[in-house]
Length: 376
Image 1 (cartoon, rainbow, N blue to C red):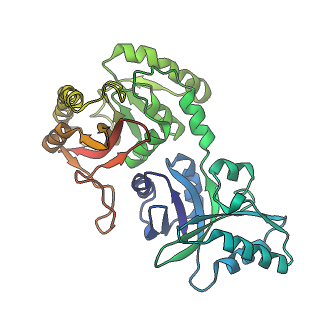
Image 2 (tube, rainbow, N blue to C red):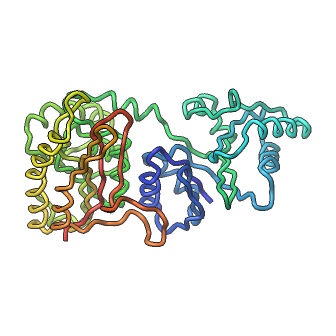
Image 3 (spheres, rainbow, N blue to C red):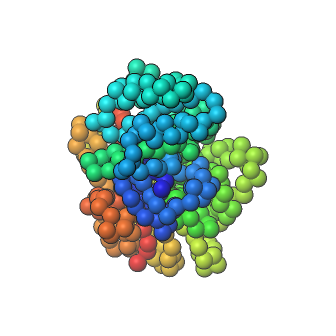
């Protein structure tokens, strides 16, 4: 069994994992983790670096017939060096301090030299786990538990958080333009079911195409009517072209020639607003403007008989703890699109009433609602 520690937007994390890994058996899940069976470790590790918000990937051991401490002792006995370890608890009712002290005593009684890294008996972040080389030593463990099941996870991969930051801050950016985070771009590409060709009709800061290139897509197409945006954002591609020989093609008329297109994109979220100028009336005005942009886009896709998957995000707003959704887009999608589900029918996870998933970041006023679509 393979386990995934989920990110903050855990529904998006699960949707992404299930899109990337097909024909798997869902063993257990909470808002903290997902456990799958019928999944080869080698295949998981090959695709791990392209997962958006899976914090860790773990080899899973069931603890039905053995205690947590006993399993750790078994694994410690296989270690060839000092047993330096760290334990993450993905269950709020687990007493980590008591467990760490008991485990240390049992390791000592077994003649195993050990040290746990948990400072003040608390969790540490991914950067510390990487720094301590716990994944390379195979000594980063997680307790995965709920009311019915109990598992132990041994980490086999952890997300490189520094790589995302470097890609994000390496870009030239206009602070009056919304910036699509690299992680979110990667997740949206994954949700498109990994077809051969990615097409982004609204390139903005090129984030989706850059991430698609890093995910080994060899055919990338783009277009954008805003020539100023094309010119000012083109500098974002220079570093990746030099490093990976990426080829971005300004062409959007090959729908009838390629069999496995997907559109992955984010268009205009409208202007950046602050706490001082955001208001319900201003949001309504922006929604009307966005409606005029989006309606002809989907109308044209229908005329072109575009029949492949579309993963696309739209804005929604938060004002003083009240949410205002882009309701006009719902009517447009109802007219032109079929909204595709993220989860199997028998999987007890709810998306929104409109079958979307939401992406929110703290202290932001404009958030994202993400749909997976197909033109009717």
